Image 1 (cartoon, helix red, strand yellow):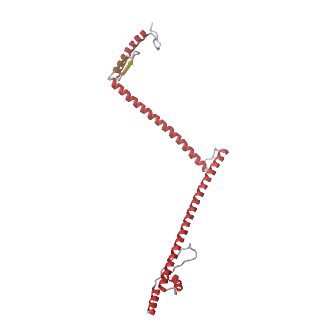
Image 2 (cartoon, rainbow, N blue to C red):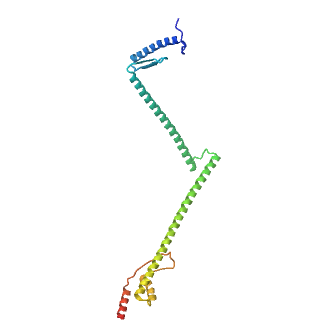
Image 3 (cartoon, one colour):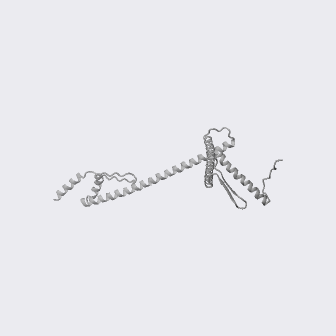
Length: 235
């Protein structure tokens, strides 16, 4: 008659539990040793009893077995992390591909292509999107044109101001020339000189201050000859 099967559960009797532990411990150590010899495996076995007593067996060295175990566990953890990271990026790539497909389909529909399968409500929503886009484009265009007009007006005002300043400078130069001729020819010939001054020196000053003013100096040969003749008469 064979031995009955023992239920795998905690043995309540302390003596029986200790006897079972001793028997099975020896059997486990024997199996570990046989496994290392027969299969050329590196085996490490650690047993701690309920009383805290330590038993161990290693086919080579327990330290080397533990180091190899830790290294193998770390490599497995890294491979697991790499596999998880690869799966994460694969999911992200799939999501991005789907978003790109949706955007391309939406773009084709906005361009009036591939409208088959759309309901009247979908077409109405598409029309609303196009109207909103067109309104935004027009607002942007109007803003750009307004800014350009304001910039042109600003430059125009600056040119008008510069022309006015040039006109004032020309008037100052003309007054200085009148004073100079007054000193040279005297007050009696001031009217004639002022008339000839505009012709001989070419100061063309118009009523409109915004028109360009042209300055041209002629050769004062005739006037120097006239001064020489007057000096000869007075002598």
